[in-house]
Length: 333
Ligand SMILES: Cc1cc2nc3c(=O)[nH]c(=O)nc-3n(C[C@H](O)[C@H](O)[C@H](O)COP(=O)(O)OP(=O)(O)OC[C@H]3O[C@@H](n4cnc5c(N)ncnc54)[C@H](O)[C@@H]3O)c2cc1C
Ligand SMILES: *[C@@H]1O[C@H](CO)[C@@H](O)[C@H](O)[C@H]1NC(C)=O
Ligand SMILES: CC(=O)N[C@H]1CO[C@H](CO)[C@@H](O)[C@@H]1O
Image (cartoon, rainbow, N blue to C red; front, side, top):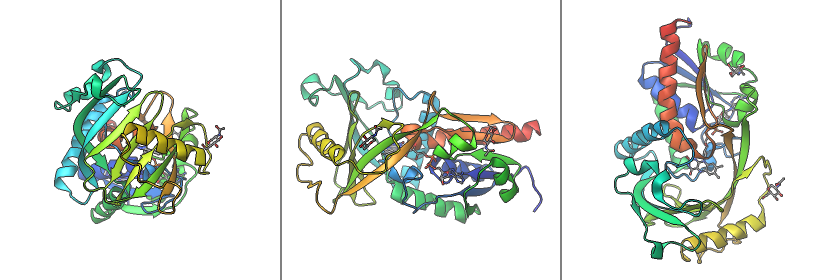
């Protein structure tokens, strides 16, 4: 097949590569995805299966426009595609590293966002607020979007590549998207890319009636996020920069359990976290010093460095990828 302006090759089938592929197809491009790991592959060698995932904007992650655009799309998915794994819940956020809500820029997206009175704050928190937001179950979302892309004619090639030239020759595409997560460290020679280790527990239970997500940030990073389609809840967590250990640390499990119960006033006292039903998860967030990179270099569009917020950023970053691909073609590089 002749190489045309309509062909785009994407490396990476994590939430970033898949979101970019969907918006590219909707914009009329023919997409081929090359990835070592695809939906259903449960190794810690890639990140997307291991997220909570909470779809909450973040006060300190920067790029609020990308976050806001992304959340618009997630809200649309929630209403239009019931099997995408996206659900609405009350989100309770607590912080012990800020004194007021002035940094919470996303009040403008969620007008129902209200402060929690001081007397109702969990112990140790300086501020707290709640709003009606979104969560997504990666075990439902990744297979769902992969299926949708295949229906729309996207080709998936499971393969590890060692250069973008290889991506070019495999896909025959003239425009390439670098959505390789931690792989970007090699693929884009970007030393700013590094891993931030996470360890969580998946606790099977009937989470459909679990009405809220609770998260505490600042001196510790603690959360309980229902994973509705999987039938359970994710309890976490930790953020350990540059730690590549895949082993489950038993002390971390004990500490998470203690913190979660303190945060939720004992909602999870019933969990026997040393029992057989609890599943331990380890994942490595693809962080980047300076934050997410969505940038064009000639005919290569970089989209990596999503860190702790890959789901929050994915569709906003994907919109930017589409406009950068269109820029390539306008410039006739
Ligand atoms: C414990 C934990 C909790 C999290 N919670 C949340 C949350 O609540 N909300 C949220 O928004 N985010 C959360 N995240 C972050 C989120 O999971 C990541 O930001 C996101 O998954 C990154 O997606 P990605 O597509 O950039 O990378 P990945 O998912 O890692 O995908 C990379 C893709 O590139 C492919 N690839 C890489 N190198 C090569 C190569 N050389 N050749 C071929 N293919 C290659 C891989 O095989 C894979 O398909 C969490 C992460 C962890 C670990
Ligand atoms: C990495 O994390 C593991 C598990 O929490 C811990 O046992 C180990 O000490 C950590 N290593 C470093 C270098 O921090
Ligand atoms: C593998 C590969 O070619 N990756 C590319 C990602 O983008 C940077 C910047 O264009 C290139 O230098 C890398 O070669």
